[in-house]
Amino acid sequence: MSKRDYYEVLGVERTVTEVELKKSFRRLAMKYHPDRCPDDPHAQEKFKEAKEAYEVLSDAQKRAMYDQHGHAAFEHGMGGRGGAGFGDMGDIFGDIFGDIFGGGRGRQPRRGADLRYIMELDLEEAVFGIEKKIDIPSQVNCHHCNGTGSADGKTSQCRTCHGHGRVRMQNGIFSIQQACPHCGGSGQTIEKPCKPCHGEGRLEETRTLSVRIPAGVDNGDRIRLTGQGEAGPAGAPAGDLYVEVHVREHAIFQREGNDLYCEVPIRFSQAALGAELPVPTLEGEVPISIPPETQTGQQFRLRGRGVKSVRSGRTGDLICRVLVETPVRLTRQQRELFEQLEATFGEGEADKHMPQAKTWVDGVKQFWSRVTS
Image 1 (cartoon, rainbow, N blue to C red):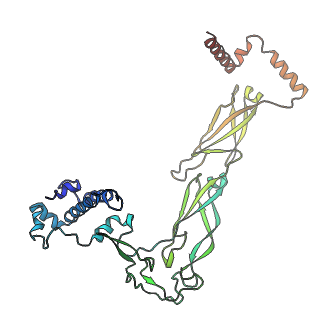
Image 2: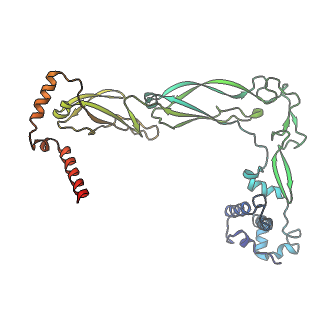
Image 3: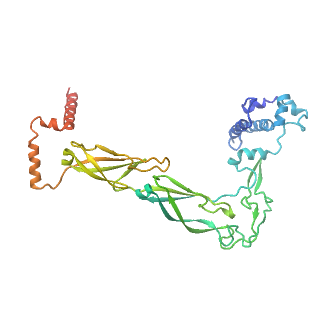
């Protein structure tokens, strides 16, 4: 049976770049790899076809010969050997699929695990920044063997992988690289393990760190401390520590982005007549003018009295929401004064002085009209 055009097999144009070619092969190989498609009887043939096409077109010399002579370039010895040839299946397979099937080249030291620490802060601490000490229980390099895991500091080449750190496993026609099970990928073995850490190179220990929290952080923000996570095995690099900020609820302020909100309770008379009141901010009290006839829910914005953003440097505002409070535990004199005031709101006078009540009454009348009609 005649072979399909290699460009057609990979679904690319003849002008395809090396990056696009590799991406196309990756897509097809992931789609047709026999381990991923065990129930498809044609998957293995399709994978072999894509693999053959990729090996030819990814080699500049072979691609030039194929562009000039087609499949004949490899059927009559023009390529220096019969057929396209597969060479070492593991080389390309490991390069393309190392992140999926554990392939890859060379020894990659396994870095230590990343750690997360939840830091509870008051609003003031988050707004202005603070330096805090925290205790982190984690794996650290063994002080007795300096993280090598060896009692005498000596290691020898692994006899299984011969120092490469990886071994090749054969699975049918495929050859897959994986970390050596004997040395864990380090390529070295220890003859005399360190007794305190049992050859691991790590010990459990609680460390005290000083963490600087920048001004303006908010709930959910994370601070990354590079290399402050768990130590890696056998002297490998340490992971990172992520400090996640949780801000406690505040008795006065609520934060939304860089703005702060607070409720300002005022007396009935202050709302009606107007007043000047001190309101709290993060930097002390400032006066605010309440105009006459102020209603509950009315908001007053104090520019630049919010939080300075840790990212943009812009400072938000403080929004004060007025809450008109009904007086309680009235004295006889206060009750009499209120009764006198109430008596002044004669028939039809309420509409003039209570616009919200009039709007509400009109809405109720319209509702009943619709219901009863």
